Length: 210
Image (cartoon, rainbow, N blue to C red; front, side, top):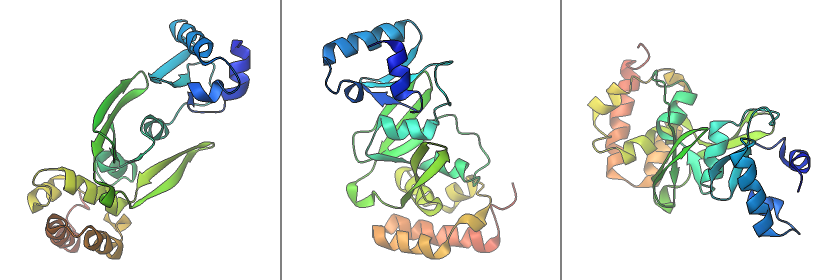
């Protein structure tokens, strides 16, 4: 395969897999060619079998949330990354945090650092597909679920002090009814305690001012 042929196939894609290119071709030869292009600086290796075009060959910059979904297909962006994306916490979040039903893992790539936290299949819901830029989408937790995921995966996350320390802003993005339904669906005492404290903070108006 020539590099120009590769560009014709994937220049509009944020990432691509070895097997996508290998349809009807010799897989071993494709892998060797991709390795050469990585060494030449034409490609970025994200993980085994997953690549992205390097600048200036790509038509658009890969969105980190889109890359996160590609690194772990059974995952969605949540926790601090989703809350920051919604503008609900003031801190800059340099690591893309996701939840997955698979093994927890931190993946370092030239594009960024990606942290995957494990949750049970029974908690794997409350997310939606969002178009980030033209041709790039990602599964992202709804605001209410991102907050509950953070509570669930943080020791003491149901404490009022922890929730206050998040300095939640733009609180109007939280659907109180959806938050209650999510907490009830999880059937978790920890979620119920967190729900009471979150509701108390919302009612007091705390978290709106930084």
